[in-house]
Length: 113
Ligand SMILES: CC(C)(COP(=O)(O)OP(=O)(O)OC[C@H]1O[C@@H](n2cnc3c(N)ncnc32)[C@H](O)[C@@H]1OP(=O)(O)O)[C@@H](O)C(=O)NCCC(=O)NCCS
Image 1 (cartoon, rainbow, N blue to C red):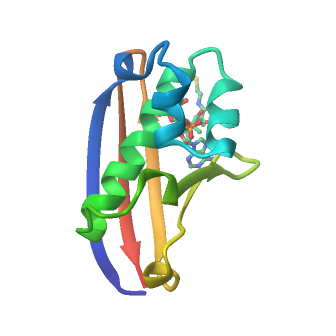
Image 2: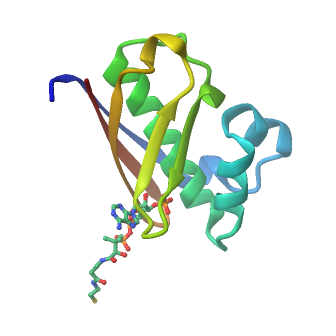
C-alpha cells in the first residue's frame, strides 16, 4: 500500500445547525442526509462529514471535486467509509476518521493506492 496524501480539517458544528435544505443539499448526498438526520445532534454529524470532505480535498490536493461527489457512509459497526465518485480516483482507497463534540468536529483522511 502506498500513501499518496494526508488531509485534516476542523469545523464549528454551529455552522451546520438549523440550516435550510438548499445549504444541506448542496454539500451532502441523500444517504448522508438520511444518516445525519437520524441523530438528534445532526449538526455534529453533518460537520464531521463536511470535515472529511475538506480533508479529502486536501489529501488529494484537488479543489475541483464537487462536495456531492464525495460520500461518507458508515458500516454497521459505525466505521466511516469515503468514496469519491470521480473516474480519475477510482483506483484510490481512502482511510477516514471522524470525531465530534457539541462545539467542534474534525476529520482526517489518508489517500492510498
Ligand atoms: C466508536 C467510538 C470510538 C466513537 O467515539 P466517541 O468519542 O463516542 O465519538 P466521536 O465523536 O469521537 O466519533 C464519532 C465518529 O466515530 C466514527 N466511528 C463510529 N464507530 C466507529 C468504528 N467502529 N470504527 C471507526 N470509527 C467509528 C464515526 O465516523 C462517528 O461519526 P459519524 O457517526 O458522524 O460518522 C466509541 O463510541 C466506542 O465505541 N468506544 C469503545 C469503548 C467504549 O465504549 N468506551 C466507553 C467506556 S466508558
